[in-house]
Image (cartoon, one colour):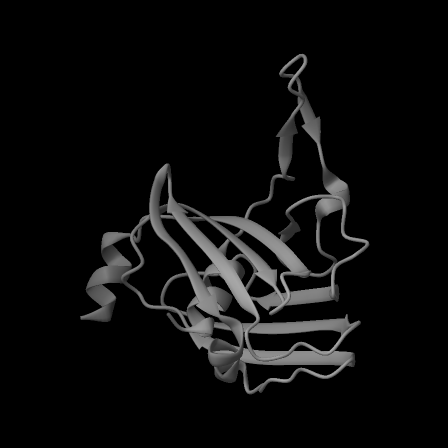
Length: 179
């Protein structure tokens, strides 16, 4: 699995709605705007407890936002690495199409991160990533949900991001225009 697939999946996971969580006592809906990642993007942190994360994600911008099938998606991300990330770091990746799980895998972060022009070890300090990704025209319409939970070789939490995007149906005119 390629890291760019992870980046595409995360970047493509767009939603105008804030992440919602449920309280187990009452099953009442709670709005979690505090989980939104700054910038023009659909990304959210998986949970509010991020104090021990090795990476602080400061801002992510996607152009276009929301991503659209058949366009080039530009991802610009900035953050701070608190500890050097060594070989053996990994990401638990899950991608769902509606309620159907398409991907549920563990990938080697250091092998995949080369797709965004980085190499391990990832040194402590400020980090910026800019990546262009051509999204295929053939993305089936529907709701996609992505979660990427990232860990160091020593199982220390690096970060966890989630997002949702809904790709719409393409009109007959746009399909015929592609022919």
